[in-house]
Amino acid sequence: MTMFRGAFTALVTPMLEDGSVDYGDFRKLVKSQLEGGINGLVPLGTTAETPTLEEDEEDKIIEIVFEEVRAFEKANNKKIPIILGAGSNCTKDAVRYCERAKKAGADAVLVVTPYYNKATQNGLYEHFKMIAESVKVPVILYNVPGRTGCNIAPATVVRLCKDVENIVGVKEASGNISQIAKIAALCGDKIDIYSGNDDQIVPIMALGGKGVISVLSNCVPKETHDICQLCLENKYDEAR
Image 1 (tube, rainbow, N blue to C red):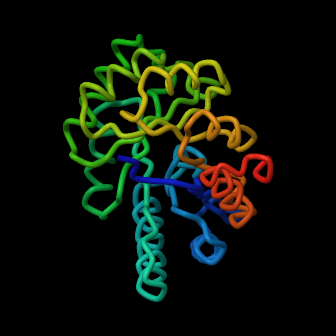
Image 2 (cartoon, helix red, strand yellow):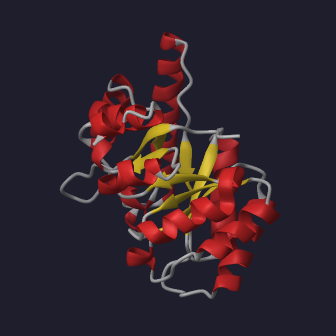
């Protein structure tokens, strides 16, 4: 059963000239996303400058997102899912970040492949399996080999979604449409695929993808939402 559909914004983290977080602008960004009709938010993903943030800054970002989303939900009687970034190249740290996400009330976590380590496929399997089984929240795998140095093979995605109940999706940013098609063919409805590249929303959704975890939508949430909605309605000419 699909949990999430449409356009989800991988929120950037605005910063001041001294390198500290601009919380005022961040709050404005969250508000603009909600007002723009975005389907959900992804704070503290890799787009969010997380390698340069202190944990107290991350905690404040989480607080702001939940404050704004809960207020919007109450005013509009509308659910806005929050998928919290929780990845690390250290398995135990990723588990800790997932525990933080669960405590905050996140609807799911986004867990990137362990960057730099160049894990084997079995190593990736064990990494994600341990994380997902340690914290019972829905897990979305994040495959972005151009940034991490390792690729989750389709067979490994299949193995994970079959063996671990709460692995529910994959954000695919490999750029390899053939690989994404193979995941769709092998996994069927056992896992949901989300585009991780804004220029591949339409082809990935044509393969059965459920939406995008987007950077573009930081600037144009309505347009990104509309592309996904048209795809979900099988209006691919208009979406394109």
